[in-house]
Length: 175
Image 1 (cartoon, one colour):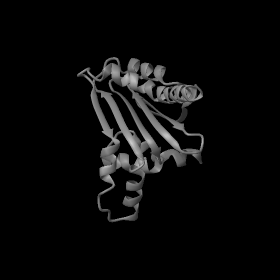
Image 2: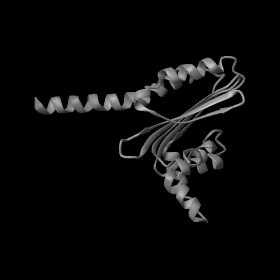
Image 3: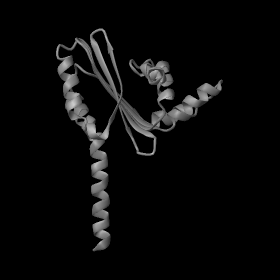
C-alpha cells in the first residue's frame, strides 16, 4: 500500500510539473490546426543532430554545447492578424505567472515583446517563453531544456529567429 501511495504521489508531482508547461501547450493546441498560423516545432533529436557537426571556432563549439542541452523549440506565429493584440493577451492569460519570472520587455514601434523564464531554483533556466504582439503580427515561442541565454541569442541570430537576438542586450540592461 505504501508503494502504491508513493507512486501516486510521484505521478501527481509529475502532473503538476508538466501542467506548468501545458499552459503554453494549450495555446498551441488551440491554434495548431488554424491554417492562418505558421507553426514550427523542433525536437530534441534535431538539436542533438546539430551537435555532430564539425566546428571551426571555439565560439561555434560553445553554441553546439548549449544546443545539446535544449530539449525543444516551438513557435506559433500569425502575420497580418487583425486580432494580434487579443492573441497576445490570451497567450499571457494562460501562463501561470507564479511559475515564471519576467526577464525582459521590449517595446518597438507598434510591437510589444516579453521574455519570461522558468528556472529550476538552482540558477539554471529550464524554459524561455517569448510572446510578441503588435498591430498586425503575433508570435509565441517556447524553448525548453537547459538554457544558456547568451548562447540562445547566438543561435537565434544563426537561425534567424526574430526576437532571440534581443537577448544579447540583457547584460547591457543590467548595468
